[in-house]
Length: 334
Ligand SMILES: NC(=O)c1ccc[n+]([C@@H]2O[C@H](COP(=O)([O-])OP(=O)(O)OC[C@H]3O[C@@H](n4cnc5c(N)ncnc54)[C@H](O)[C@@H]3O)[C@@H](O)[C@H]2O)c1
Image (cartoon, rainbow, N blue to C red):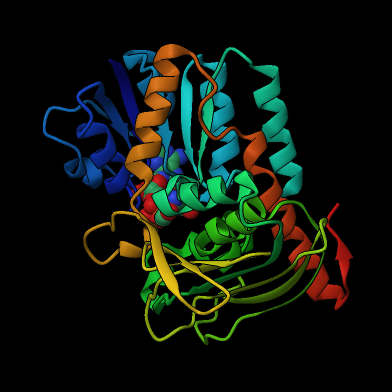
């Protein structure tokens, strides 16, 4: 049994609270938000704080969930680690590569502490099945990867939480906030990316600073080709699509289903992942699996979770995409 606390009771907090409260081996020990009205989001009687340091000193939880705007992930996690607690931190690991490297250095400097970064789509049953197929070599090498994120964010999404539309507090738009998971999977499944060339823009007229639309052509280290397309300007939120072409078959993930497409066009469903209920189905349903896996890692002091170091490459890809678009050039992913 572990005792968990949460900082940030905004939109994503429901998923974290549900994961903690539905696990008999996890106890919600306290919650924190600057906005006192949000205390109603946790069960009555749960100790509530507006200052997270005070919460940690008084409650001494084993794990703290960080569900805060992006610019706070690193500084708040640093504080928590130095106060001696393990951390389950929402994505992204950082605003940019310089901060991501600082975060990885913090992890290295504190081998006694556990810090998990919430890239939960790596734990979707479909992703796990496809990763195992790729790693087995049964269908040959990866020759192509395509990721598509056709999402929609309305003006209120930004006006209600203004940090989301800013470089300073969010570090970007669709790539760091919405399609980060898919960009991460393009590397996690496809292997190291050597070079890329990208276009980045904003097709909405909301007057926000950050990008809403990205297309990038990737060149993988093994010679495979990739295409990444992400938008927040679709007419609705529709399923992410991930397609990996191996030498002997194509594998396609869409609507939480992994399908194998053979060279003769025949199709077989290989795996299905549960779909999150409600309008936020597109988050994926693996938060609970990740939170439980981390709880087991915290109890057993094992390394079976997504470390800070594992979450740095996607920030490097994102930053290279921004630079490539600015310079209109094919760039090395350094
Ligand atoms: N893994 C996923 O699929 C997924 C999905 C959605 C959001 N997220 C991530 O979750 C994080 C939070 O996003 P959100 O949409 O819930 O944001 P939000 O703006 O809805 O909520 C953030 C909350 O943090 C509180 N807060 C800000 N500063 C604070 C401080 N110093 N101390 C205590 N509370 C403070 C705010 O009052 C607010 O309630 C982001 O990193 C986002 O990228 C992840």
